[in-house]
Length: 274
Image (cartoon, rainbow, N blue to C red):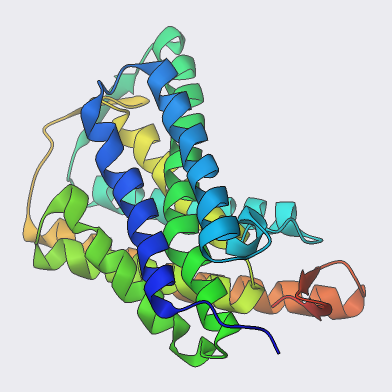
């Protein structure tokens, strides 16, 4: 019979990862590229140590990042859905007059910014997905408590928001809506890859619009602020969950039509995703 790792050690490991992710970047300049690479690499070292020696698991692959069959497809699908949902949000902003588009930035600005965004948004997303969704999926799966996983992962992601946004009701509600879609996707697929794609794609579209300093691909003027736009943001972001549900239904049908295409390994069993 497999010996269960005490809950206290799971909480300790989570706190170590969460504090590393959220506190370490505050100690160096945002433009220091070498330190960002060291920070990202350091996270994976810490995650391996926590999973292998604190939790007594197989290593970091046990935290939802096992490269099962179809993992890259799931990542790509998630990116596409996340990017499109956010694109719809900004298109709606434009149609409602939140901002005016007066032109495009120069390619010499756009290309480096997008390259930086692809890399930075990937790592910021995967660190969060491993720490919250992958980590606790592993816990709830081993304790046979997956019925509680979506709720727990959504609450943890929502509470994690205070590191960046403080305590604000609309920000918390926005994070809860996103967290629900992310956690549901992990539950259905058994890994973080599609959730990571959603997270990465949405973040990438945000950088397309606003870059890293408020200036994205398009030159925006007369930017308006209004509660209306907050409600629009919440409403359109909520579409991510039904979008994911429909995508997973399509993937499931394809998997049944072509056995093995969307299979993944969970423990010693192979299951079809979702």
